[in-house]
Length: 355
Image (cartoon, rainbow, N blue to C red; front, side, top):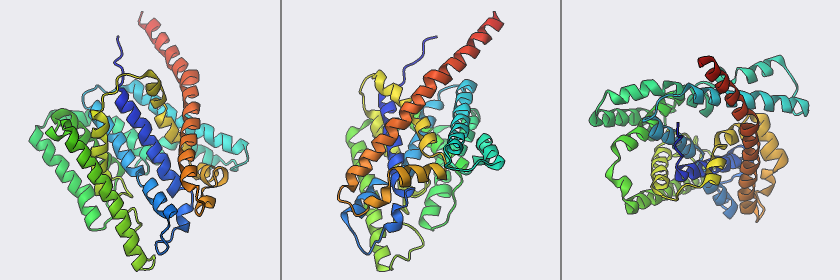
């Protein structure tokens, strides 16, 4: 069987998205936001706010990619098992490495949690939501096949109103991982199946993308201004319109960003495709736990100490590149040394049994 080569424009997009997510974590997981003061606006403050907004948008983009491609593919238990084993591998191994290195004390309870990571994070994180979404793909696709374009559009509009528009405009926290991921999956599938005319118009795509990014920036500046007038007492943060995946600007920006990259034709570049194989692993490594966040952003990179440093921008960009490169290298080694030999062995055994 000839395996279809992945489109390099989409694989490059995956790499870009993971860097967006790492940049978001650089800001929100490092403790540097504790130093923010909207009544004292500096270049570094504005840089950090604009540098770190894209994490939830990035998550939406990954789900859009899944919906766009998987709506036309058959569910694969092999892919699901690879996904689950990768999650288990990093959960257990990193925990044990922390114990061996004396970063955290060993306990049966925490060790059990590392083993039972998948059921424990269902409905509580991107990983837990995505693993359930993947299991639901055959049923979602069956639903899509049973409705027409009009009904699918109506379904998406209803879900967007319930999960995005109402919670954003009325300041209510109606967010549920699995329900929202199904919504985004359906949007990705709709873009694939019914391809709105604006998707093929480069000028419109660029205008929509630029407009969304400007709206994100303006929303941050407005929140800054209001917060300063209220004396830093707002019940929401300056990322209000993008601080959850279901916020209006987080999903609109994600759709525009996805279409922008999908439009690009850059040919097949094996090197980029190989790097992109590691994107989920990069996420699992650098966002493993609170211990990892403290170790990475506070102890090793010492992000808060750069808040008033004129080279903050360089430290931020360099940190993202370093974190991505090291995590990608680790995951690539896992793939070639463990995952591929493991699955090749069992595939060979299965073929012998069939014969």
